[in-house]
Figure 1: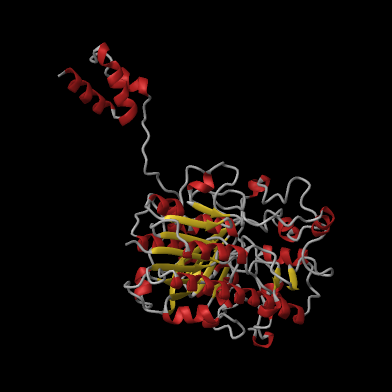
Figure 2: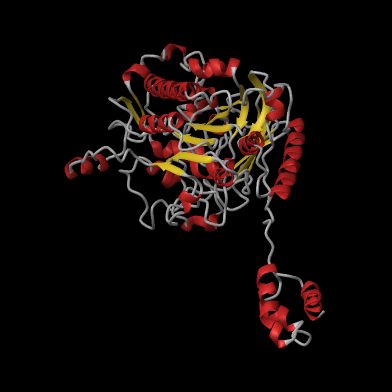
Length: 534
């Protein structure tokens, strides 16, 4: 019997928000226990783009963002593309997902439904709670955050987090406990938490001790950071944000992760209650991280590659009976490897060439390794300024009332938002940009990526040259994929012309039907014509 594939995907959760990753302020008891007994947790798992849509289009297909141009928030999977959901559905899985997948183009009617059997949008049995127009206007009049620092994304204690996470979780649990049929289930549950705004219920805030927070990386401690980092600092206007305010923002963010821990436990408990936990491969992963005060910034950026943005939680529990060496591994992994691993456990062969590598060997032996380098990419070329995402909501630009005004405005600066690609071997990290504004960090000596080593010492130059070679090889090996279907070089009329003089008139329609159905070569159609004559 095929195992169930359970995919839990919190949004914008850093790798270091869990207790078993060394954060003494974190409150993730279930994830910590899960990692120590049931799963392998990857300390060095990297996303392939530090924002939502490009990352998800990557790890749900096994393709890097550059392969099919999925580099922006505005270009999603189209009708000629596939995903792990569509492939597992075609392989006999019942695919359930909530609506937060940031994956397929919403304007194409029926496309989302082709990737899943059931998509939960909202509880249709409940009446809508209508909002008065006056209240809606007030909600839109200013960005989230306090009045002095409107771009902090900080809201603090809230009666309830303003998203659908809990409703989606209850819907997923209902489907687990009440399956539609006997098919194995592929369940994808994408949560908003801990994505900003930084706001959470008081019960979760009280779980976090701000005095145990690790030190944050301050911009004044760094040298050689990217133009985007400096541009965002300039536009966010948070120079007077006090250390106490940063501490509270970071505390609330960890509290949102504590809520994620609770919801994950709810899902696992439901799997156990339904009797399908053992026969489930469970994947817990985030799409990217969050600055959360590092480099004096909230939220994220698309073309900077600090570990706080690019390293993410990745925990894998195999089905019972499969090899498992539970605990934390230091092996390098990429999120494209999630695709390959899930397909491996499902026993389904991908229907397209892809670049993920199954992490099953590492799950079976935490000392194993499947990668020597990891990669991440983002940003744009200067001529791409007309993309909606990059041009900040049109020619007039976005207004300052928009919480994302700093980011969208910074993205108008072509040099700040230029394309960049990161490569790391776990010891060094190199970021290449066409302008020459590149970066090199020694991750073992400088985990906070404070000191850009480029042009510093001869041995670091040698490291740079090697990283550039690795990067070139990677781009050459992954620049595209050839579709597995085939096209004819000739039209039907051109092919028929090659046998017209040997094909009896009464056999013409039979011959044309063969040409349309089989798309043969010229030699094949001649051979078929000879058979018709015999």
